[in-house]
Image (cartoon, rainbow, N blue to C red; front, top):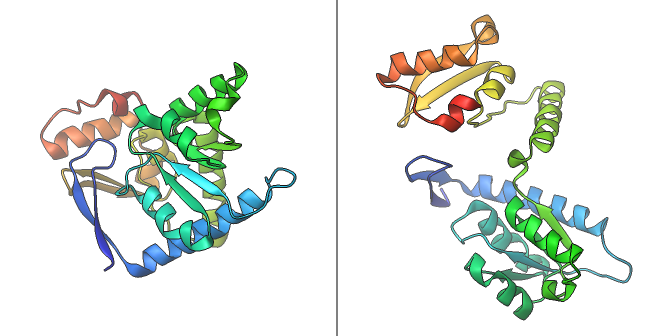
Length: 219
């Protein structure tokens, strides 16, 4: 055991998740290798490694923790912004080549670029969105590719999702949880024949309460 990382997921209550040394090392190795190859193929003419990276995420966020553990050892400068309200101030004080961000901030920065406010970016030249699940087209592409890789390589994979249609469509087993307990476990032909309405009914029966999360009902 390397550490206990407390997380609430998207809507749940905070709970401790055990993170092993092997798990963390595997994440760091994969992240560092993929990130370096991805950046190397996008370097502007004359630009050399190492670079500088800006992150808005808090230190207890897994992605930020990976950045802290992987970029500095590779010689990169890691710039931390503690409050989104101070983003442009911090970006102006700390030159950053690369930044991964949520869609809303990406759109704001892109609009600045279109309006000619390039000086506000202080040399930031590579911007990507780290929340693919918020973009339906990208999410579908990621899911389709993941399913193909899993099937071809016979991998054991766990997908955690709020989207009931995806939960039914992908994988060969579905587990529904409520307040930390498994309330429904289905696989095989029974899973293939499921509909979202079936899951809602199962939840109500197993939990003893109505399903009140509009976001999940509509998904």
